[in-house]
Length: 488
Image (cartoon, rainbow, N blue to C red; front, side, top):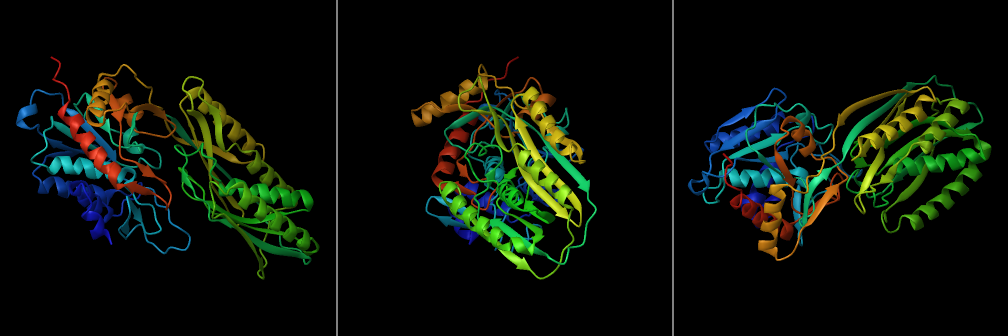
């Protein structure tokens, strides 16, 4: 299956992408992929070094025609998001990604593809192993744990790099040059509940909501994609307004940086209310199909009457939890006043688990404004503190302030115009890039981000455009050939 991908042009990039995707590379468990890259460096007689946290830098001297140019840092992260369709059996920790070609797209078989940011890694590898491409001295920086906290960039050594120009290859539209991004913070709410036995006249029902599209919780948060956690609890609130509902368990969503696609809950209520329940379920299902036909056309709502009798939260505790989840902001919170069409602040209600009375809720709040990020995170924490939850903030990282007067930006724009006879879009994105964090370690470094077109990142629908990757590869090499002379 993946052999087919190896033969796609540019072969030097796709070949390395296939090899990379044979190596499991979950966030926080990047040892195997770092070993793979060290082996690659050794094979190509390249020096390398690591910092204490595990980020890897592979060094390559300039070609003879570019000795006087500035050293350039080429940067991508090595970890990938692990998401799969519910009906797919796949072991991310021990299996390579199964890929195939579908027209102009490379896709994975029911899982995330890993093009985010694997294509960037593969392109850097292609430069490092080439004996024909002109380039200045290169410091290839491969960071760890970008997808679940950016801890690699946050803990990057302040002395491991010498380059003054950084090219980040993690933008996902081939006509965009990114010069700024949002920062983020993780919010985790937890609480232990006492449980009650089910009464004789009560029944347990499992509600399942699935088939949603999902996607990147930053770059796609403005698209109106359904959040399965939010939709499920809007439904449960409807039920609770008609009759008392008690919560037994919740299993909703996945990673913080992915819009949740599937959620389920086991609830209990008096058996006399079963007909009302079925009526609300039927009406809600029809409403959801109509409401999300443009964004989530496979949305599915179903239920199952359970024979087993599960313990529940009390009526009051259930109502408080239902209300809190519905009050929690989700999606776009504020738009930028300075940049048209840019989401300034958002929240992703990413993961809800209630197992044997132990509740854990995870959100990822993003903003290009530290004040707005702080305001929204306090709103969210206050909602859950009011029902007795313990709220913790972690994994905070800064945004990347745009520099529209950047000399590197001018060179990159000129390269794009030379190749494609049109102006690229210069954007700030509502997603986390490592540039802002790397910039906090190297304040004098001039940075831009670009990359090939990738759709559906962080979901099993992720796909990478073949023609766009060809365009990106030309663009990348043109940029390297135009790196400016060293400034004495």
